[in-house]
Length: 301
Image 1 (cartoon, rainbow, N blue to C red):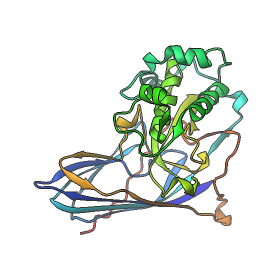
Image 2: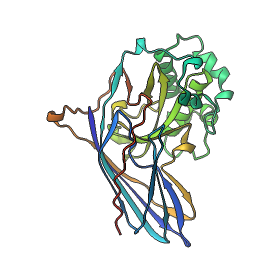
Image 3: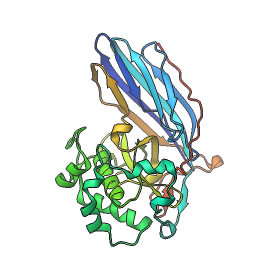
């Protein structure tokens, strides 16, 4: 088991007459990601509404901010219990046998134009044996053919753009891998969160995007940017692509400061926790069943 302690601080200057926000910065509740404690601090006296999606476990907080400075600080401790599988024994699932709630992750989406990547996907991976190994080959291909470089793309960059430009940040790696998987009828989805164990040379801790692929009977973790340790990935939300799970969707005029994120792993010999490390097995923290647990909110004036 991995225990992670983290905080996310967001600061905005809100213009008159105010602004509506939808945030996705609460740790998701799943059967394998347990939120032990959490706290939300708000710099304005507000009454936010939190909604938990029954299928994904995504938690969305909606609020209307007054003009002026708005500060949010969310902190939590989560415990991750990883399912560990033998890669050679994990099959791809025929479309006819996929669970109904997985089917949406087969279709093209705004940033993952899988319908336009069939020829590339079939040429590179169509002749490989089906299963976890083929998906890992897709992940490694994206990691090898795209250069990780900050500030090289923007919010409109798609999988097609990344395939052509061969440069991007974590969300671009994720979109390209997802599109290639879907082009081969393999369900794949976009995941947002933060991670423990990234190379400090990449800069301060930040939000991270990675991929989950449905194989066998569950969703398996992949990080095509190869910047994170999969055991140290903590989830906020999942969706078809980045449009579904932005950490902040803003309806109004604001000036935003860069996020301030801190994360550490907590090791406790009495509770059998361990530091995240790279391992060759297939890892999953989602068998497809969301757990609905109430959120703890503490607005502060």
